[in-house]
Amino acid sequence: MIVEVKEQQDVRQLVRTLVTEKGHEKAELIPILHDINSALGYISDEAIEELSERMNIPSSHIYSVATFYRMLSTEPRGRHVIQFCESAPCHVAGGRLVWQKLQQELGLSNGETSEDEKWTLLTTSCLGVCGVGPVLVVDHDIYGNVTPEQIPGILGNYE
Ligand code: FES
Image (cartoon, rainbow, N blue to C red):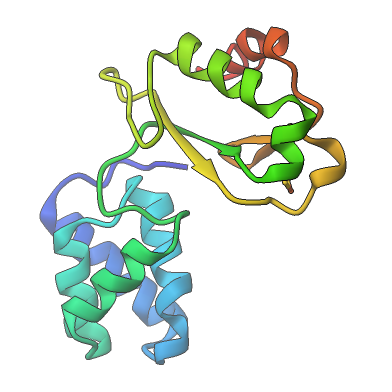
C-alpha cells in the first residue's frame, strides 16, 4: 500500500515512528526499509538520512542495502510493481512469449516505470514456484501458468 507521505517532515516522522516501533538494532534495518518502501513506494534520500540518524548507521551503508535488494527501490516506482520470473524453468515453460506480451501491453522495458506512474516492470530470478511457470507477481499477487493471452486480463485487475 502506498500512503500519502510526500512531505519531507512526514517522511522523517514515518521513519521515527518505525524505529520507535521496531527498535534501532541493526537487525531491524531491512524490515524498516521494507516498511518505508511500502509506505512511500520507494526509499527516499530523506528517509535514508533520518534512518541514519535514528539508527546510528552510515547513510552509505543504508543506501547499499536499499539498492542490493530487488524488492526495495531508491527510485520512485509505479503504484503496481510487476515482477516477472526470468529464470530457466519459467523460460522453458513459455516465459519468453509472456515477457514479450507484458512489455508490449505496458510499453515498458525491464526496470521502467510508466509515465502515469501506474506500473513498474521488473524481472526477477526464481520465485520458488517453478512448477507453475511462467510466473509473474503483481504487488503481492502471484500468477502461475501464465500465457500471453492472459496478460491483458491480469493487468485489468489493477486500478
Ligand atoms: S524459475 Fe520461475 S519461479 Fe522458479
